[in-house]
Image (cartoon, rainbow, N blue to C red; front, side):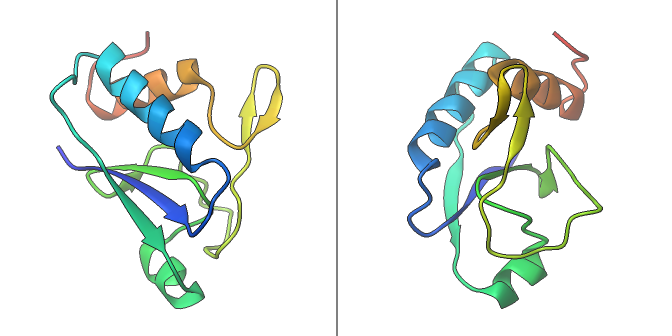
Length: 107
């Protein structure tokens, strides 16, 4: 399993996204699964990677929060959460996305 956290340089949500991702992986039983953080540095790279905003979580190359109607580019990503828009997904939504992607179902 390949887990990657895509970020723009100096993203203000980098730390929160990394902590959230580690927590979610641990919570779904993927304690020994690591992840790498990759900086998307140019609009060309964003286009090539299908990067629609920072932060983006990929599992085996697939965006866990795919938004096909959004164009790739260097931008901050906004996630809907139960308390309003945020720079990272809510833990519950990330857990659900991980479980769906790994075939474990919803929490």
